[in-house]
Length: 251
Length: 251
Image (cartoon, rainbow over the protein chains, first blue to last red):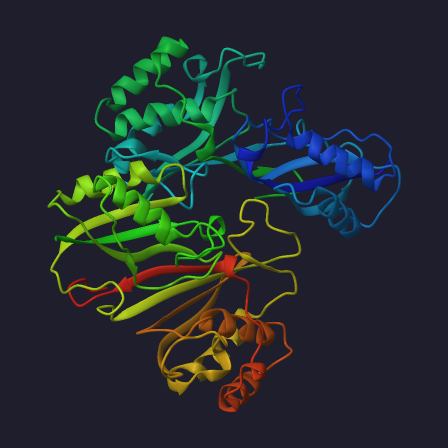
């Protein structure tokens, strides 16, 4: 059966997360239902590069599906988007790929962005799209502290209890913090992340930004290898899966 | 009674527009109700720099209100935001201003942004925040054509039938079109605009961007002084009132 790679955008606030669940509507179910409609009722399974949590958004999630017929890629995109309406999920791109392409296992790097709205007033337009932090944050100090986390480490201190990864050892490629007007933006990339890792790193860097912690505290939190040693998780609404890199799709 | 200037952000898709109306909830009503709650039940009238239509957003709408007591400006901001929850309206800034300040009549320049999402796929995260145009647009050609509209003109061709302005003659200060990845952004500013003027100019420039019109067609539409001569209104969801300038608040 021909395999298609889909680049997918969604508003995570409308879903229980990527993964199909008993307790609500998932992005996976939305896509699989749309694909089944396109495939005249044949059940289709969708595999994603990153299993985003409830509330987490995607600008460039990558998914693969197998379809029973060899449709043109543009037809797949249009038909899926038509069946997805009016749910806040859009297939931005569809491409026919070799059978050995796997959205999750072929991925070489995942990129995430975290948006903090740093001002006294609550967000109106970006409610559920940003983390509202009213205490002034020093983005330069956050960036310096973030560099402590680069490279290969045991990230147990930044890992959800429910994390299913075999090992807590991951290699963090970059973790950049910068201010853009009222927003503090965190950009990060790695081959893979532990469950909640970006949100835990963000919650920890927020402590640095408001002056409660310094870079040494971040180092100590990492060394402790205990979730309680690092800061709390930042809320899901500020997090965006922006891009996934594959061998045949260089950055 | 002390007068306060409020800088206000809102998601226009949740409202019938700025102005209080019989047929639904307005931003004006939301703010006036919040101000009355702060003023222990005293009725408060809110005046805005721009009476945005239903669906039109604001990042920097300016409003003034008179309150029966001399509250600190930060208290006004916090109390209004508290009473506004969970409606998508936020008072970003509040300031005590002289009694002769008027949000509408003191305004020297209004600035608007129009966001077009120009790609094949529908928007997921930015539904009701952008105009989705799937035909590829040439932003450079749109910018060139836009320059025809600069300066002092009779803008009858870009004016809603319901427009209440005394004269259709306005002076357009700038109208810039540029591409930022998948988005075509239009930025414009003038002392004041006619009703629907930005949306009518945008709908006209879209005809240019897709190659149906050229700059001469835009000139002819302007010269015709008839609404039917120009392009249709762009939808309200792509439009943002970004900033209003006042004598005491230089850009």
